[in-house]
Length: 296
Image (tube, rainbow, N blue to C red; front, side, top):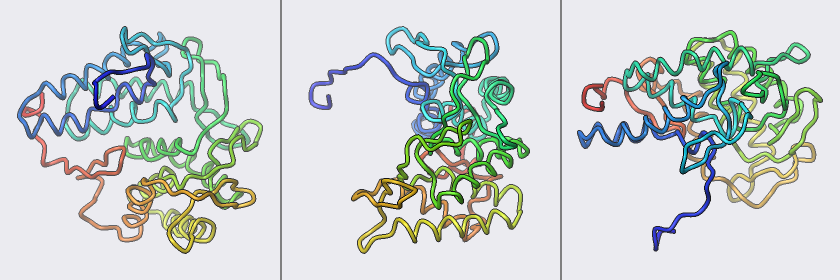
């Protein structure tokens, strides 16, 4: 409560618990006070240290004890920016402790969560103790992983995962909020103007130079204009099959989705991925602007 300072709730997901590294690291840099970055890294370290013997983390955590509350391990929604920030903060701040977290995390994700169905690569939910797949439902937020894999140099998995998401978009003209890739069935038909597949496409354009991805980006933009545009703005779609619109528009459509379209179409050299790291909310930070010894 912003008036009283009182809090409520006792559970957070991994993304909520450990997505502070970039912003708090930048704060430490400009204030020349390392405590902000140290606290953020302690949160990330607590989640990382909860990993199982096979290297997988769970989804939910107790805010008081820091204990992991389940064995549901996934790389998408609820966990996404935890993984994203380990790698991106390492790129930005050159902290070897983060690299030591990222390498085994990536290995575990690709060993236990990467799942092939009908020739397509998806990332499932698995039991963090056994590695056995528990759920094959993915969400509209999950394509962020394509860009993360590509940035980390794993272009093979990135390209294969991207192709699966691209096929799902083209079948429906937009992406459904929830999709069971094992059953090939939409479980939530809503589309919220999300940026994740557009972001992934932008990364693939930059990192592969393959014209295929530029053509895909143009198709996605055309489809969003066709199905989501209104007289006033752009709308959510309540059902990707019927294309029935909802009377709302998420702010991240302007802040992220359109930004990645703009960057993908313009190929502005100021945002060369060798020199820039994007936060999970698409804010660019220039790597050369930060010196590791002023953060840690």
